[in-house]
Length: 405
Image (cartoon, rainbow, N blue to C red):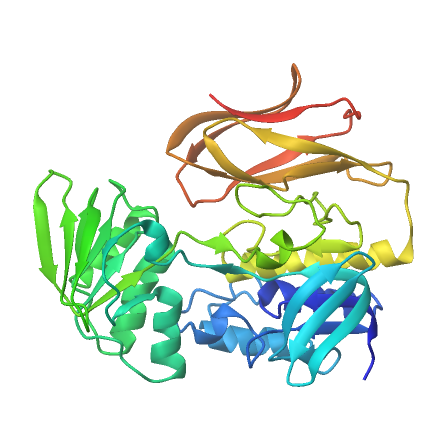
């Protein structure tokens, strides 16, 4: 079994599988995919809603079928090792892994990190109460229902109003379970308004602008207490509570490595090519922008895979990096660094997220020079694309800032 590879990909979800596919198509043959789960395919493996495939295969597909399709495109060409956890990464493309073979050290000329995201659980949301059975995330719910064929409860309450929150209603319905209510602290759904109409059609009551204060029950969830938008105290009997959304990247590996990262989040510094502070390492997928749709991550993986293949074939001039600064309206920018070299494209697209609702102009400046201006209507957790930003005139003294007006 080889320990030396052209490219090692950490994570065999949509982005990782797409990168592997492009690398093979570009003539990079020694590619290894590492996946800690028992099966490759990522989160879509246990999704049954038909929201996948439109951007990749031009037809709607259920998540598990889509995952099987994208896996079939690479599994005959690339080595895939499942049940394998990456313990740490080091300079020189050195990757230490743990599996039933024990500890091993593998080396790649390039390493692509595509470790995905996770939902914020109950304890991180500072919800009071003990820890009875019946408190779980949407991801855990999907595994219970679709993989283990179990029902974690029959009277659930959903917390959150992102797209995943409303898809949870679908997941429960497929198991013959009707959600009692959906509670969120925002006064309007984070997802599109049509999602709220869907919830009402399914008989799920929405409590928007509400704040969860207490989970009751010793052995099992018995009820949930919350403060409604009008300030009244409410209590709702239930046997399970499903926390959804508020995705955060899987950054443990990054925080314990030599790569430069954002101290507050753990998100690595990376440029428009997905390239990190160590030029042998790249990042891609939802770990860089929690959290976009599977198709979008797959297309991004194809792009980054192509860029990695090109980096193996040629060594260009040493680029210089310019951090992307954000005003207080914005939460993240993807990328968070702009790399400038003779080979870099003259225009880039920034994918940004906001901390709060914003309707108006977004401006990108290099000092006093305007690089981009556009009108946007922004909501938290929605991706906002600032396209075709002109970076042709950037210098090592440039200062890029994204401003909301």
